[in-house]
Length: 529
Image (cartoon, rainbow, N blue to C red; front, side, top):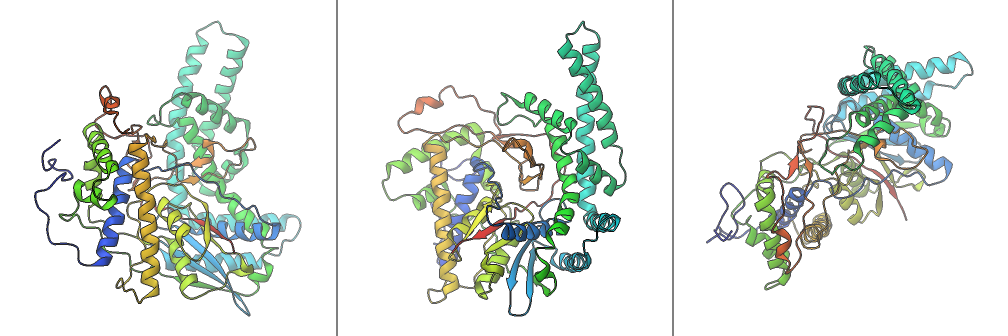
């Protein structure tokens, strides 16, 4: 690989480059996105899913859960276009629900008004009146989220059919053999599961289906789904398809949470009565995103490495050799270049709320710096909050890279402008973190993490964390593939590559839902002083 370029891919060592990047903002963003795209090419998932924690006093926990569930019921479309973030502002005479969405702010604001008015009107009478109120509120929420529920129902039916196909084979095989008591019990469980799956996949009414999922989410049959799924996935490599039994459980959890979220909102109104008695809803509209990254003549391997390391660095040569090898076996430079596709970038909902509170010096209710969001944070949001001077912390992140992520645009990177200098400092720190991850992945043989879903299903696992607690929400940025690079590069150990067998594609296509939604992760944020 000594040629100046690789056809249709990233140039390696060009003979000449164009005019320098004179604009300091262009230089700043160019360095950031080349590291983001390179790390994405090495593997989208950068770590394990971090859990959402409400490890605070009871009143604060209920307030946070209330905001979290409000975001959830407002997120009406599967994917990321309706991802919703809310910060609760405290004023002298009332409270402000400051709400942002990736793209559908006006529709979400209108529904949030309706939902809050309904919650304020519910007085928690005993007996049937309370049940009726909960049922009516859940029905209203599910109707608003009909696009999401319809898609979740379609996915559930698909995986139910896959489960039935596998179970029918097991039942047929066991019926032909003289089997043990354990096998007879297993066959009986299979028959029960078949009947249950047929029931689950034949609901037409969305409320009835969500109610069924909620009633059954902790049932022995859902536990049987998890048991079979875990058994199927034991020992499989990171690129293997997810078990249809695990997937079926995911969608039971997603559908069930439509009931659970509305119920918890009603439960928590007592603690939030002082807020609901005097509130307003304030829409936040997305600021302009930064310009789309351009693949100019400076985007070449030599230039990227020069911007990562000092001159004559041994690490630079080692990283170059490792990256060249990974391209040879997995085509990472092709994946890298494809990210420069001219797609419009987006400022995620949680960043909109953060910057709104920060720039206008808003006061969080109860001095609790918490921004709720309907989805966990993407990796870039996690880093942005980590390095932001507002001193908020990410309480939940799926730690995956979305290449259409953007910080808010600044007009000019002027040293006299505090906002511009603040963003420069944040983006520089983010870029350094991305560089360290690229280096660790390639040089120190840090393997790619197994792909995991973005969102949690909210089926509580009393035994502790489980991968079965997550739901699969995919998007146009979810590769139709799962990260499979488990290679690294060690200095002076070229021989480790000699007999490596890797597919020509860095990823292997998973058995997904056949949809392409713009998933843009959200974040739940808790602040500290």
